[in-house]
Length: 99
Image (cartoon, rainbow, N blue to C red; front, side, top):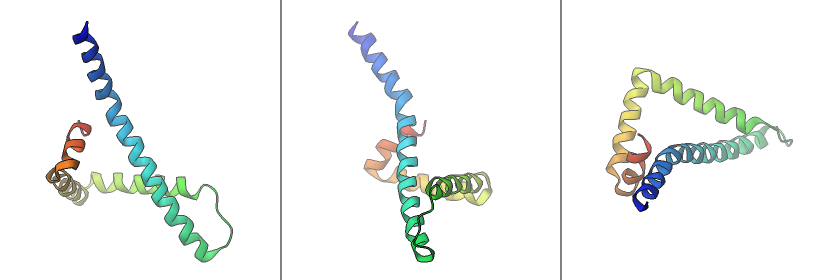
């Protein structure tokens, strides 16, 4: 019984960890892009522009996908992955999450 519960917990973590990591990264990316967009927009107009943050975040994700699918992007991603894997704490989080 104890072994079965342990297996269920491990399976649950294996399923939820990549999804949670993806959502966390997208949330942090949204906050970052939205902050930059709000700052840049204030230079041109005093009024806020609703929806700009999600739109720009989608654009950043799209551009990352475009870069990732070409040769230069693959090289950059491989370099970034090697860098992450060389960092002790980051590699212990990234290695299981990428699978």
